[in-house]
Length: 226
Image (cartoon, rainbow, N blue to C red; front, side, top):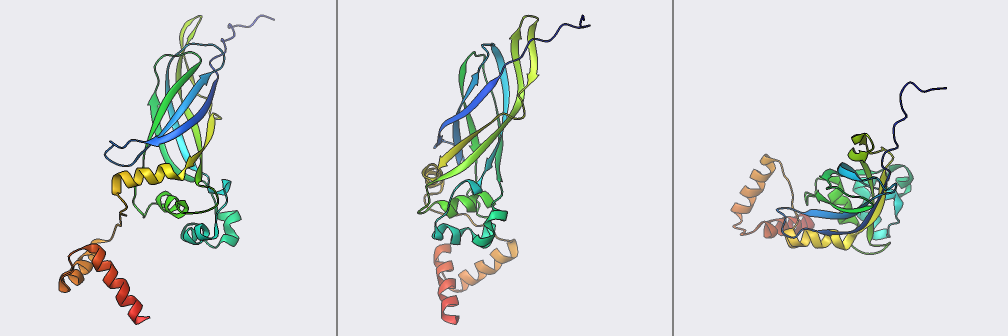
């Protein structure tokens, strides 16, 4: 039987892996760098790869000390329910474009993060940043994108398969060093305008020079009332 059209040549096949992580101390804000290898396994020359990575935290893939469980109750509820509540959390979606390569190629995904404590992923990192149960955070990277590759008929275009992924255990020390470099042990708190106005008036009435002294005084007053 003769096919009406010639069978298309097989396209590239990729394997992904994250080798290590660090952060960019010169970035304007906290920026995690995931150093990733892309390996083309068929010997095909890739002219360019427009690659996108969806990065997720996978809380269920690690254990937690009692202290960590206590700090994470606000995110996941009572630990007795964690079998149902430790769901994946979206961290970021980032993109990069490679140069031409064959075989193995190194790329760096720059992941902008925040120290805003209203963001669930920030609260998660803060919750696991001290003590016990293994000092890492499980990540899963889900890849997609467009590939431009060499074929007998000329340059071809294809899609990165949706099943392409990699896992990585991010050391908590990397996140801590990144946040220390950008906020030097301080935390960021977002408040509604009317709440900030009331706090500012309370602070001014007592001539408190800093916000730290203001919150310390509020906590002391609350302790006296309890």
